[in-house]
Structures are given as structure tokens and as C-alpha cells.
Amino acid sequence: MRASEPNARLLDEFSDALWLEDGLSRRTLESYRSDLMQFGRWLGERKEKDGEPASLTAATRADLLAFLAHGVAAKVRASTTRRELSSLKRFYRFLLRQGVIGNDPSLDIEAPRLPRSLPAGLTEAAVETLLHAPDVKQPLGLRDRAMLEVLYASGLRVSELVDLAVAQVSLDMGVVRVMGKGAKERLVPLGEEALEWVARYVGEARPGLLNGRRADALFVTARGGAMTRQGFWYVVKRHACRAGIDAALSPHTLRHAFATHLLNHGADLRVVQLLLGHADISTTQIYTHVARERLKRLHAQHHPRG
Image 1: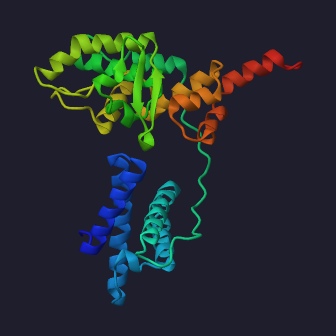
Image 2 (image 1 turned 90 degrees about the horizontal axis):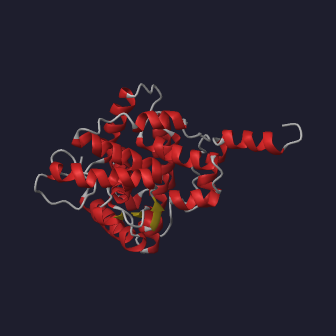
């Protein structure tokens, strides 16, 4: 079911405002829009039964609570409910600021608490096994090795990795220029190993994959197009299976491993925060719970009964 014309127009204006104010990425804007369209569809079905207006501007606090309760009853994850509520709150604050509504129906609605989940662990030995899984004699294998090396060396988000353009990587300076969330730019060092694999990929594999075509993207597919998040997820799964790693792996697992292994080797939490592109240190602090090896070594070294 398509959004009604008034709702579609409001969502267009809201998306434009988010882009102008915060410079949010297309994926983030689509996420906001998807949440609001889902609420609009649910609201339309609910109001149609009662013969009431189904416009998003007519939604009440009771409607919002009923929508969130409907999701809980359908056993959606708490993180999904939090995201949906965040989208609703931001949308109705926008409408209130624009004078479209007189009261914010999302005011004082609290998000559900999330259980504190620790990132899935991956040992340094397991990472090494995964990195060596691709067949680097093949162009796609060389590309995969370079992508895995960059991800583990830099801790990039998977969207940041697949969106990398050739111009964002400086092989001479040994850094990658990343455009993160909220259009915030950061420089991340890559390390010699990752740089060597990127240089090999760019010199030996990428030209053949492009086959005369032009592309800004650093990592390309066999058809010469840019790699997607879903495509790289399959790459990780395939090589994890080849390496005999039974743990559930995703590209995000290597980001977790990057942060955890840095802390295990003595890196400062603030440095890890900058490298990961976290706006708030509290987001990074979860990694202190998984850096057990370093804590055990420090205890054994400095405690009188260690």
C-alpha cells in the first residue's frame, strides 16, 4: 500500500530537512522514511475501521503507544522498537517546529531498555585464519583479502568500507579518509599489511575486474560495479566457512575484533573511540568488557596477589 499524498508530501519535507540540517546519508534517510511509512500504513488500517482520518498529523499519543505495543506483541526486537520510536519522535518534533501540529504526541514516551549485549568475540588467531582464506591468485580472492585486511586494520563500518572511493585512500600517507555517520570525516591509519594488500589489489586485480570500465569505488565486483553491504556479507560468510570458523560472523565482527584487540594490546579507549568514529565515549566503553586478556595481564602484573 502506497503512502497517501499528504503523508508522502510530509515525509518528503521531513527527509529534506534531515538532509539539510544533519547531512544524513541516503541509507539513514531511507530508514527514517521506512519506519514512518510503516506507521502510516498501520495507522491507516486502524483508522479505516473507525472511519477516522488516517493522516500522520492526526495521530495521537494513544495511536503511537498502540503501534509500539503492536510491535512488541509481534515479538519485534527491542532495538527495532527503539529505532521506530526515535523516528517518530524526530518526525513529530519536526512537525511541531513547522507549525503543522500543535502538540507532540510522542512527548514523554520512553523507549524500551535494551539488554547490554557484548560484541561477539574473535581471537587474533581466528582473524589470521580468516584473512588467509581467500585465494589471492584469483582477482576476486585478491579483492576479498584486501577488503578483509582493510576492515580489520581500520575498524570501518561495513557501509564505510563498501562506499570507499579510490581517492579516499592514500597509499603514500598510509591513511584512509572516511565519511562517517552525520557526514563527519575522520582519518584512520591502515598499517603496512593492509596497505600492501590494497596496493596489490589496485595494481593486479582491480583493472581486470573493471575491464576498461571506469568506477570511483575502490572495491568493485566481477561486473565492475561497486561492492554492496549484502555482497560483502556473503564474502565474509564464504571465507569463514572456508577457514573452518564455526562462529556466526559478519563484517561487524571484524570491527569488534579491531577494537577489542587494540585494547588488549594497551590502546587508550579515547583513541579507539576516534578510530571507530563514535560520537560518545559510552558507545566505545562496551569494549572494556570484552578486553579481558589485557585486564588479566594487568592484574597479574600489578596486583600483590596476582
